Length: 222
Image 1 (cartoon, rainbow, N blue to C red):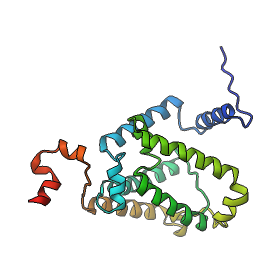
Image 2: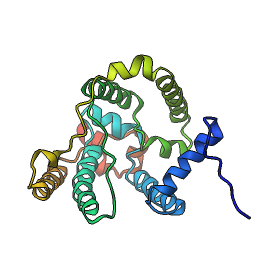
Image 3: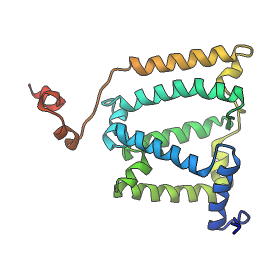
Image 4: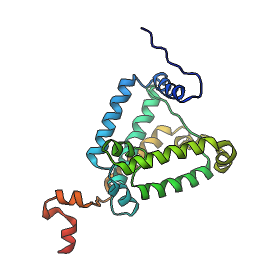
């Protein structure tokens, strides 16, 4: 039996179908592969516990460095790997234009929200899967925010974002030395990940799992 996917139209079902059609035709592999990658990603997030409020909020208060260490390591390794995958034809970029006003305003709001919420778009779904109602409520609020952005994009948000400065990349500033620039950038960022001192901000549930000699709160008392 042939499966007919409705990809035309602006109703909810059509938009959902278009989302899956986009994934299928992007050449990233089957939906099963994409699903498995998501499962692995979620497992890594949960194993490292960076989906916990204390990790991201602690990062914002400079009391926990697990998140920045992971971010720097990921950016460093992925920048090298992705660049050479693109050069070999196994991947391709989706470079977005630089809009300075939108980046500054959006980045500020995003940072404030992360610090208050203690989650990011990557860790939020993992927390929802763990049954955290507060994150689910925040996700619903995010959907409404996306709706407001869509409805008022042309009239309000687009002018607020400012003019486009073009699709800029770091290697493009060094023509003829792109490979070297990517390698240097990736290596430097990876080194930073190891240089950053390890600090952890624990909640009471995490502290109870640690032996007394490893509990930082007891060390501070003594």
